[in-house]
Length: 85
Image 1 (cartoon, rainbow, N blue to C red):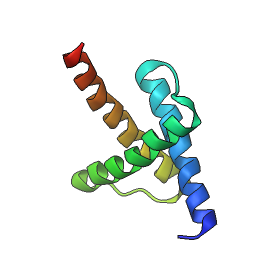
Image 2 (image 1 turned 120 degrees about the vertical axis):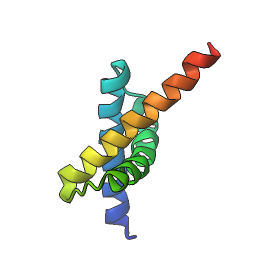
Image 3 (image 1 turned 90 degrees about the horizontal axis):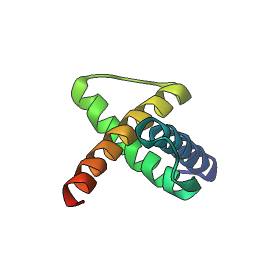
Image 4 (image 1 turned 60 degrees about the horizontal axis):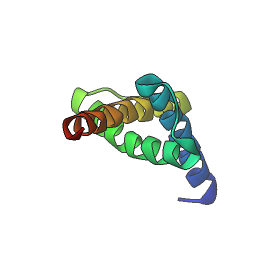
């Protein structure tokens, strides 16, 4: 992976994390928090879309996949937070 690909991947993660934060709780988690949630969300979204047989392509497809995965990730994290508190 070259530097440009890494920067695009991190930018997609930041956008997806920010979108997921706005969808799930009304705000983002800062630049690095959004990137982390978005990058993990991209992995989760790719896995979920693969299970469902959904295929995306291009920049918009990557953002959608990562956002769906990040929303799912935040949902599961929210379930665990609610059980503890």
